[in-house]
Length: 158
Image (cartoon, rainbow, N blue to C red):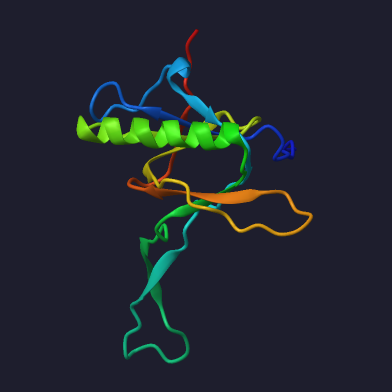
């Protein structure tokens, strides 16, 4: 029987490539983005390509088509000074890496799952969030995937 998991302890991390096209594998290279409260689903439904022929008399037939990640992924976070500083540092690291032809990688690390979910992406600088009376100050921070999400071995190291 499977052990059901909680969302407690899930983290979002990023790392910049040290070698072009090579995903960082050393745990020390991965930085946690704190204050994340909600991670969007990164499990896009494939489009359906209709293959129905005139011979069909009752049902249409389909094959799976392309998956659409839908553009920028919105991560909900508490807007704290620490989060703002971390996000700005990540955007700066991304921009410096991009100038050198390097990618920035993101990992969703779920305790109890032996693999991490990885993708390359481009972060967007933070804007000004909405605010309401008697509420937690939150923001939505965006990362646009530039590669398909994949499951893979979590980083190791020191």
